[in-house]
Every structure is written in structure tokens, then in C-alpha cells.
Amino acid sequence: MVTRSALIWLSGQEGLKDFATRFSFFKKLTTRFVAGETIDEVIPYIREINAENCTASFDHLNESVDNADEANKEVEEYLRILQQIEATRIRSNVSIKLTQFGLGLDQELAYQNARRVVVDAQQRGNFVRVDMEGSNVTQATIDIFKRLRSEFDLNDVGIVLQSYLRRTYADAQELLKLPARIRICKGAYSEPPEVAFPDKKDVDDNYVKVMQLLLSSGVYHGIATHDPKMIDATIDFATREGIGKEKFEFQMLYGIRRDLQRQLARDGYNMRVYVPYGKHWYPYFMRRLAERPANIWFVMKNIFKG
Figure 1 (tube, rainbow, N blue to C red):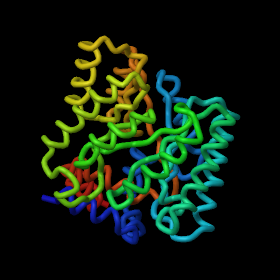
Figure 2: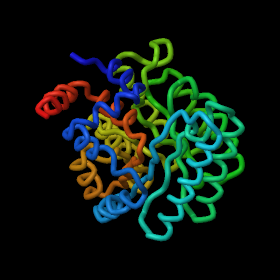
Figure 3: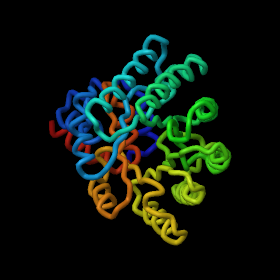
């Protein structure tokens, strides 16, 4: 059986993208998880999402940018996204990865680039979510977010935490002191056991602990999961504690459990769908497969059918 760790390793081998896309089925399958390669291709999908009473978050796919010019191009892309959100009146915010903005080159560069996007979003009445990546940049991401949060309001910029990291509960406690709007997810990067919980049960238990901490804070947070058990745990806790549906939002990824997205929206919960796009879709796509390794057999069977 192809393991989760093997798929995550493959996610770092973007050179395989050209080989994989020779197979029409593989290319077709990516459209389930990736909305397109340009902003214009994404907007119709977000209109559909909005029509189902869900909001969205634009996510331009690109990671580990290795030069300042490319990092600047990422900033310009996000400024175009924010302009298009305003012009088309779709209901969406944006998500950024700091490695897109040069974090691997220089932390100050990444901060200044992220700040440009937050300034523009603030002026347009929009919101920027700073995504979390591998554990090697967790502290740097938190440090940059804290700088941004010291300059901007609670509803201008937020951050993501991952429940598979052992440090996350303590990070959540610390960030809530600011306070901060936090998105909690499980995490999808390969990490050593001393850094991340290797067992799913421990990841889930930590997720529930952090979720309860967040919902009890009175701040509007994002509960990001496709796991029905985590959803039920969130609803049960909110109901028990008298926390209204308007006090938080569920978040899911484009193309995953759309039936559940619609149902939660119909049930009156706030639902946000993360909509990724861009030419650098391969690492993201492989990490989505890694979340359910059994899917690889379905993919491979159809690829080799031609």
C-alpha cells in the first residue's frame, strides 16, 4: 500500500508533474481539487459557492519561492485577487503562504511582502489568512503574524494552526492573548514524531482540545475539517456551551465533501471553502491524496487505463 509519508514525499517532487499530466485522467482529476490556473477561471466557481450560501478564500498555489522577483510577483498576484474580489463583488477573502513571499530568503522580506497584501485588504474591507506550512517555518510564521497583528485589527489578518503539531495547543493559548482569529486544521506535511503526533487519535484529540479552546474564547475562528467526527464534536461542544452558529465558521477545501459543505450551510452554519488555483498545483494535489492514501489506487488504476 502507498503510505501517507510516501505521497507527501512525492508532493515535493514537482518534476513528476510533467510526467503525470501526460495522462488525461490525472489531469482531469486535478480539476476536482484545483479550480484553474488563473483568477478569471476561479471566479465562476466562487460565484457557485456563494450561491450555495458559502463564502470562499482565494489561495494562489506556489511554495518555497527562491528569489525576490518571484516573491514580488506573488504579491502582485494577490493584489490583483483583492481587486477582482471587490470588482466582482464575490464573497471571498485570501489566504497566503509566507514561503510564497520570500520567507526562505529573508524573514523581513516575507514580512514586508505580507504587509503589502494586508494593507490592501484592509483598505478594501477584506481579510488575509496567513497559512501554516511545515514545522521548519512554524515559529517564523507566528513571529511575522504577531508583527502584522500588532499593526492591524483583529478582522484584518488571521493565522492557521495545525493540530498534528505537539506545540499547537500552547501556540493557540499564546495567540489568543493578542487576540487572534485562528483557523485550526489537522496538517498535511511530513513531520518527525518528536514534532508531530504520529497517531491519528492523538491528532484528533488535540484538534478537539484546540477547537474547544478557540470556541470558548469569544473570537470568530475557523474550524477547518472534512472529518465528520470533528464536525460533530464541534457542533456538540458549541450546543452544550450555548455558542451560536454565527460565532464561528466551518472551513473545507474546494472539491472535498461538497455534499457536507452544502448541508452545513443549509443547517445555518457559516461555511467557507478554500479555493486553490495556479500553475504550481502539483504539491498541493499530492498532499490532498496523502490525506486518504487509499485514493492512490483509484488514481493509478485510471491512469494506466490511458
